[in-house]
Image (cartoon, rainbow, N blue to C red):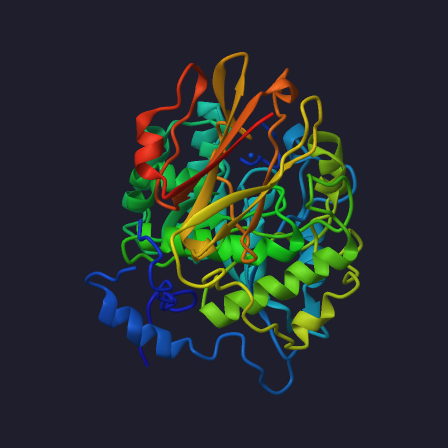
Length: 467
């Protein structure tokens, strides 16, 4: 039997649909948020070794999660304020992931080694869990040094199966890419690559900084359709589209979803509604996608954490599959019972063959704050985005925001854009929308008198309205 440190999470990527180019949301704790190379043969062999991962077997639940993001803090315990956990509490929280002594997940992922969290990997191993152990990196060099050294010690102790050097460090802008790359390389060198090493960050940040992808031995993106105001109906299609693009950019390295989830309560973000029903639906939908596409993952997260609400907003306390007391939330059991949904995430050609077309179907009047609505025709939505610009007082501006200028097109081909995200936007006299390939970066326009020529050259269709 072949053994390898990658064996429990390596997957064979699903080829993108024909025509897919190969080419901010938020921060939870600090809010502002392919092709195969030399290892192809080994990875193919390893895929056969792990083909039974998550399958049913006697004496266990019908399906076991690949991995789940784990934090043992409860109640008002806030690690940002120096809260610590002891072994008793860690064992109690990990014990909640067992169903009559049977593990509900194969892996857990942690975020730091300080505050007592350095005990988690050892205890998890005793319970039969593998650990993706994290070192929290922020803006304090001294604290970062403690975290990095602590992670290396845990690797040397043989209780870490994957090392995660920083979590959304780029998204929070706590470190620049060069400093993060140096930290990743330091851990890899110090441990002689005995375990896979990577950082975890927003998929957008990883795509923007390929040097960070190169630095790790695996790639660990976070996907949050909720944070990007994507309706629950379109959430997995959104994730699928971006995962294909990131897998293409990974250069043959395994891509592991390090975080994704949907809150069961709190305030909405546009059409993204938190609710118990939507949380359960997203959980089942995502796991169905991961199983069908053979993608390893860590689901966010195990338990609700009330302490987060004060720092991050009402929905921040409601990301758990289990509530804060360890009770499985309504609707979540379906995943563990082995239920799956059929493929409704792969986009297909809209309105049949023909010249690519974009239309504005609902333009709000001057003074209104409703979203701009539109549709695309004769294209596969998974291959394109929409870029929208408005003219106010004779000057053009990118919408909805400069951190996220490319608008996702759902499988239906019907898209929406918030065009009143700045002061005075409701007075715009002209609106222009461009249909652009997904690997085309729309130019950022901040008060220019004319739209750049590169935009017209890169787009395949355009629509405009004068109000």
